Length: 231
Image (cartoon, rainbow, N blue to C red):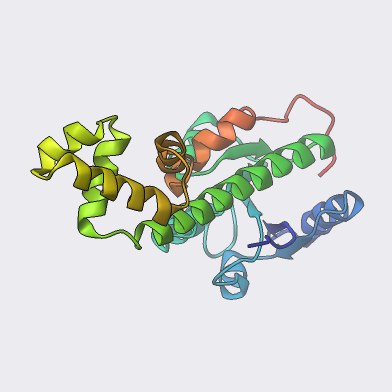
């Protein structure tokens, strides 16, 4: 499935700051949508986003706080990458944000280039996560075509067992094990056991691993307090 255009959601109850951030993304040709409250974002957020996205979230908001919103998103299994920003930064706040599942924490005002870099990393993270989920769904669909016996044979093939060893473990003759092996590969569209193992190999498909994926792309916490500031 072709993914839709990336989008950055911004929540800041300061309309001036929200406008500045909107113009920064406009200048970089990054689609963005600004909200003045967590409640407004929740009401507008699509049930099934068509493309990669991330949330740039002010820590201190009127009404629902940033941390409360993140907790609500996670409880609803919404795994959008969240970047917190705040003009009142302390280590405790940063740690609380990261423990809650944020992928980054920026001090306001944020330097334009730093903001764009971190947001792009978050969008890349979400794109890879979505691709992994789509890949997992395709694999699950293929696996559903296997019979119970074929699943047993497949599990042993992945462990490296030969047809003879599979036959012994399942109490069937080697010829039958070889036939099941052939059926497994044919149904899954694989030419070899090596391809089968690659198809079933773990990848970043669990949304809970998004922070590790993001960390691989860049530092998980960045304070911009000692750099030129723009927003």
